[in-house]
Image (tube, rainbow, N blue to C red):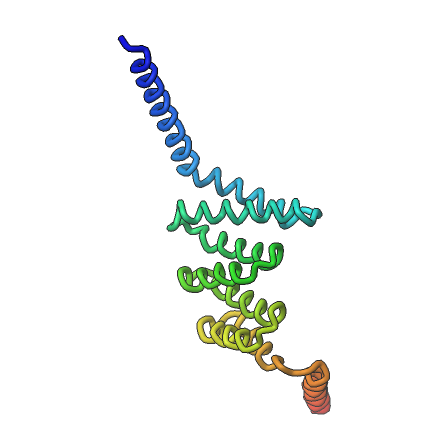
Length: 195
């Protein structure tokens, strides 16, 4: 028997066995969503509650996003997906400063999970990001209007109505408007007390 043939067959056998072991490991790790959810939850707490900043927090945030993205791809029908999209958006926006990616995650919530309790919250965060962080007032107004139209009976819609009224007003105009409302309330209380 030829030694090189035996060696070749042995290597093929070992390679095939290694491939099977690797595949089983990947399948088993992906088939346990509860373990992945726990791992994601722990990392989320670490990213948001850790006093550390800088590169260590950035690295953790990137790892968290990778884990959530992998989970979403492996479990697209899981009910936790809107939560992971929202956490990914917050992490992109507030920790990594990656606004387009964060806004994209928020859009996915509204598009694919419009009946989830996080949908109006996602629109609110999107509008706020446009308004306060990116200073894109037209996009903010459009998003606040969308929030009011799609989710009119939420506290976020009521807040959006007020924010639309205040948008593009100077601090002086806002103070004057609040003073006028305050005076109207004082007059109403005085009138009621006289009767």
